[in-house]
Length: 261
Image (tube, rainbow, N blue to C red):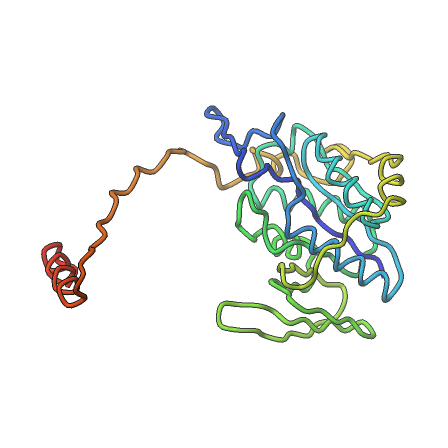
């Protein structure tokens, strides 16, 4: 089974900074981590490999520093890693990002399963995975919390706000997974040594089949026009009375005054 995992290196959420000129995230020099949901996708890919055999390849789009995240995936047991990195990719929204990743996946070649985390913690859009599936014209199941693949048939339990749904489809398929699907493993010493020796190939815009007008900031139909800090909300009032009846009466009076009731 050939499995591809899309991973993203994201800024540490306590260190997010915005470029005031371009309204995009500043990534250079900012502490970064592997997107947590993508770690669950990597773990699920490794479990599929252990059960069905085959190969796991991770792919990411980002700056040169994203190699660190790809090496972390190799240390976990991934076979190959590819970084899509080019200034032409910079400033991409989800649509331009998905076009670039889909082009990279096409260049990799054959695949049976593509796995993604349900969303990246820096953007929280949950759009890139489904968009990749559309570009590749394959089936997709999102928010997967349980997965079985037998004789080319995929059976997935999908998590949503009111419970679970069960879907079946055939390979090839793209799946985005939630945190509850598994518990990511830790890297082994042998895996870490392999990752340290591994050379990560870097593909630029010239290496993949993409229209320059459809990638990066130029190919992004959604753009940030303004970033601002919301005004701090006025603090509420805590009603403290020894008698509960008195406290309720005070609360009702205040709610009436502001015309809530």
